[in-house]
Image (cartoon, rainbow, N blue to C red):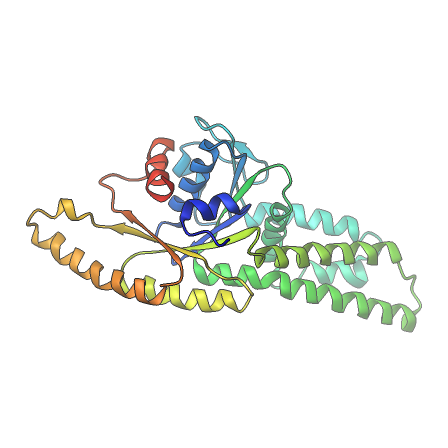
Length: 305
């Protein structure tokens, strides 16, 4: 049965993705979700794929960029920030081992492609899509445009590997160099890793992609485009979170807040119409910054009860 609430959605999936326009609160919603799941007893991992945003600030502690970090004051929760430059070193080391003795014909070309750093970051991301140690993996993704580039990466990379495998076979016949079957098998295994990641991203039984937005024109328009663009990858968006809704009880004749809330009401009505088939959850504008476990638990309570 299709989940009808945010709580039902996050409890029924293993991989949870949070995306949206920059500055709408994706990191807050992803972190609040991770903390809430951990409090329910789920062994949870939160992964930040946006190099410009750090989980360290919101959890008030240093969080590793390659190794998992245990979150303080929070049982069942670990975190990691994917740093593309650090991921690059890991990726190159693995590729060099795979290409040993064959780098002049394949490996050097492979590691000098224009998008190698992004491929390296996605390579690390893919490793968490194969996670078997945690009950839940929450991904705090980059702003929408960058996320869509990341999602297209395994398609391009997988196709690139396939083309290279075939071209090396042909070169081995023409130039007469030794055809390394073991290396080709390693490349096939590498391609399968990416193909599995693509399948997992669009598998509605294990994954869910939630978009975060504000009740304003630009975030609403970008969210609508994101839903369409994600659909081209076979990814359906089952839920949206409308952040920073001004509570009515704070208006109290304040003309500025009343005008802002009136504007929000206009876009809340548009959101209800445009995204009528999705689970929708409103999160109020809080009177303080949201960081630290206690604040995240307040947000988690609003989202999931």
